[in-house]
Image (cartoon, rainbow, N blue to C red; front, side):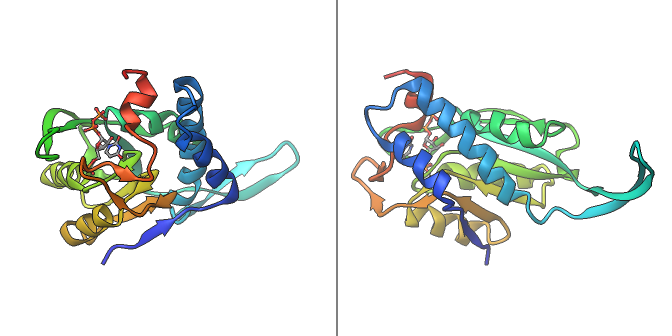
Length: 209
Ligand code: PRP
Ligand code: URA
């Protein structure tokens, strides 16, 4: 069974509260999402293996540490997942970025695929899938399945706000994928929006409503 990592550092909770507020505008919403993504990225990458490397400081030679082995890819689920990429890339500037385009059908709430462009060597990378909202879990599950079809076997899911039902679905369909979230909310409403949530993340990031 995959693990759920609740990253509820006080600074993340504080920033998330501002994002949830309906009076927070698009510019601040985007900025805060980027800041939280960087802070969450710190925990998502906490267990990356290190190796020794010989360098010289201006004073003397030394054996220092650098991140070893598997390289990283960030894969945002369009559109809202895009808002988490820059924060993560500040932390890991060499990460490659793939894109998976999915939108939820407004009536069925089921995801519809419209785009997929991934780094050529994605199967050799640790993949961090980003999407601020994990509601029914349909979008995340389909995106992860698309990555697995392309040979990825080391995937982590980084979200901002999750509903319990979405977490359960990802754990049931992808028990090998750890989930990182800043908050687990109460439930979904009749339109499959997270309650209390923060509304439509894509619309708030891009100012489309
Ligand atoms: C939102 C969100 C997730 C999805 C979550 O995207 O960004 O991708 O819904 O819902 P689920 O867990 O029930 O699948 P949306 O379909 O609104 O597309 P957008 O990001 O382009 O606005
Ligand atoms: N997508 C969103 O943007 N918000 C929700 O609450 C659910 C799905």
